Image 1 (tube, rainbow, N blue to C red):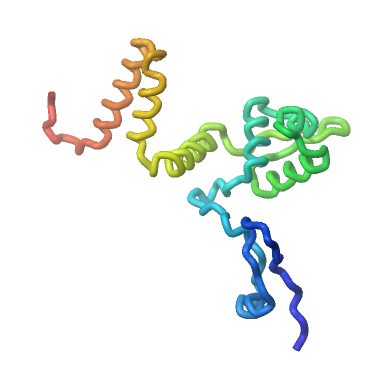
Image 2 (image 1 turned 90 degrees about the horizontal axis):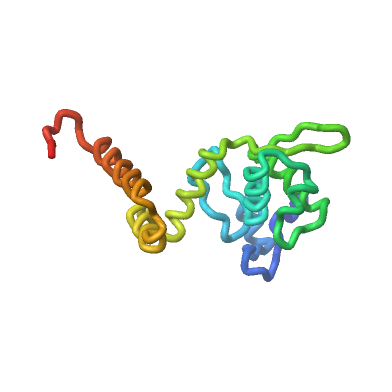
Amino acid sequence: MASRPNLLKISHSPLRRRASAKNLALAGPAARWTPARTPPVTDPDLPPLSRREREIMDSLYSRGRASAAEVRADLPEAPSDSAVRTLLRLLEEKGHVRHEQEGRKYIFSPVVHVQKASRSALRRLLRTFFSGSVEKAVATLLDAESRELSEAELDRLSELIERARDRRRPSGSGDDR
């Protein structure tokens, strides 16, 4: 029997699954290592990003477009130049980033529109911190920021809530207040 290459990494890191030759044999030829804490993909158009990839995307969204050196300058505890270029290449492979060549430099820009990315990030935030509850998130924001909201902002929030109610009401329900 031909030996099968070990595609699973064995590590003592809590982020990685431990694998044995027996587990690899049971998993079959398509087996490969994946982190144990891989977040579920809920939006197939936006695969989850690592913390560092999100930081790079934040830089690109704030700048609009940037070189690898400009992105690196925005990163906290910046990795090496080659690490940033590798992460940008990976983001390009995932479909989040594209590049254009200007002279000898690659200039990167986000592919995903900022509104779609912000909706995805907001859904992730709601799931993570508020058990998916929009009410809990809004209550937390209002509790923390209510003193800083102007009358115009409060009126706008009331209008948005009323519009959301109207969308939920069946047409012709006769609910006139």
